[in-house]
Image (cartoon, rainbow, N blue to C red; front, side, top):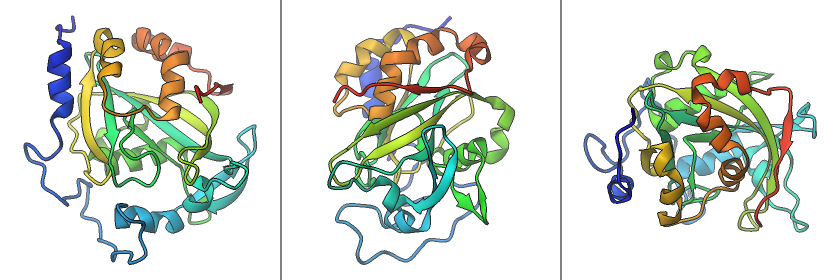
Length: 262
């Protein structure tokens, strides 16, 4: 049985930033030490240089409305909002991470992120990439990014631990400069594995019990990402209530279309 945790306790827990405990500024929590790229002298003010480099280095997968790959484009192109509000449709994934008690990890995106800085969202949101002439598998991409963002060793994330639930097609113009238009593959992951978040990606985090979630959301000091908010309103309760039999609810062949509140 999950112990009761008051709203005040949760707020204190979320307010505890990653600069505590064993976290050190600038340290990378990768399974091996990555090479540090040279700073981008033309980086947008306030944006972390490594993320600016990724805008042109990372090659994302362009898709049609049935999620068929139709080409590739840089991350910059895939998130740039055109004069008419158009953003190229591309493939993405979102991981919802639960501990073995059934509490869900909620994180706040770092202020130096290019898209949706300081927004609250689910554990890990990113893209499969085009690597060595091949499109990356969704779960392979999820493991790569959870290693990078949350510091979880790859050997603690067996592919069989992920449940591929469904896909969500959504569009959001963001701030009018950077936005989203994605077919988002939704993955659930449950484990008590320890995490060591990367401060370039995540500024705050906590595990929230299901019983406290609805009361906790209005206390947050920033907005929710559009994809997380749509899933929260349309599917999260159903999935969370059935975490013990989540594979039975999987609909990997479907593409859901949810309306934004905007």
